Length: 177
Image (cartoon, rainbow, N blue to C red):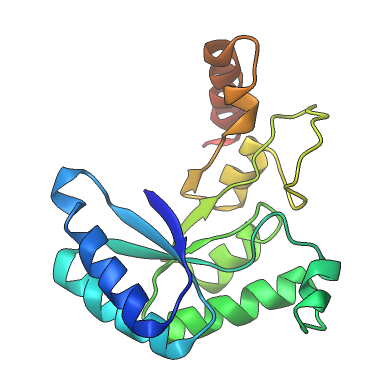
């Protein structure tokens, strides 16, 4: 996954997607972009079709709260923003989303065939404070329908990263049928 979270004018994003698509033979399968402007998404989808790279629409960053959304002139809650942006992205042909653990279940029900990537994962019992506000456990994210989870800090910052990765994998295994 090339997690660039592209957010620029349509032509710049289109060119960036085309260049990123050149990396697909080398194992790059996904590319992230913010989903806020129809023309940008339309052109990104067109560029992605040529290479086979799959676009993942970033709906609302896990660090954003309702206060942050309000500061950007959005009066609803995070769930409403996620659903609104996902709908806009889906209408333009984007078939995957990056979404917090709090919204993954409703996106799975709304877009059953979408690829859902879920950051903001913290192991059960974690008390870590971070800039990510809308977080959840790995087991719950998978149970709710995440195809992929993104676990950074809990593994990176652990005294024993291998053991932490094992604990997270075991938690997922408990929730997987």
